[in-house]
Image 1 (cartoon, rainbow, N blue to C red):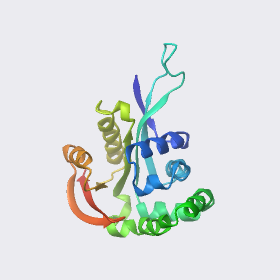
Image 2: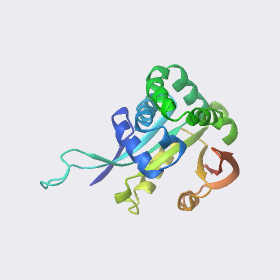
Image 3: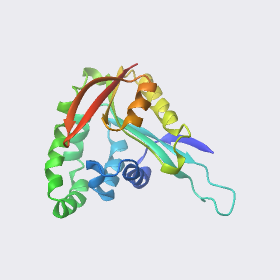
Image 4: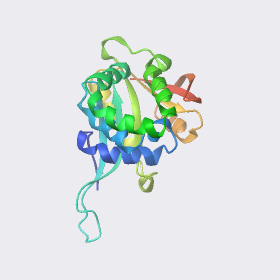
Length: 209
């Protein structure tokens, strides 16, 4: 049985694993599981971060998992710039060790990290009063896809945005990810503009509440 629960720091390692499985070869996944785990550990602890985890109930049969398993998650923030500032100041001590270790192996990633910091300026301006949110990631276990889990996660996030009186929600999608673009279009998102990030063409989608 599947159930949704608020995303917490306990889901961090599983979220990092699903992120890497869902977007292989992208900049964030190239930072490695250690950096992503810190990211997903700190995001729900931030005043601006929130999301949901899709979990399976423990199985009753001998070969089934004896503990709930993470099969999908969705994460968002009410302020991308504010979140990055927090992670680069209050959370810097947690990020630096895995980041520096990764930069030593891949110096080219340092320049791309600068592009990530500039992302809020490229994508959109944050609305005043906390009336907008950015959907950062939505990932589903490869073996559990095409079962409506992504739609359930998105609906939970949209309901939370409504309860918080968030007027708009934005998401950035790789232009070549046709499946993701169709997914957001089916759920009421419209493309507002395009940009280039990490040398790739990106599409910015937005949905009004």
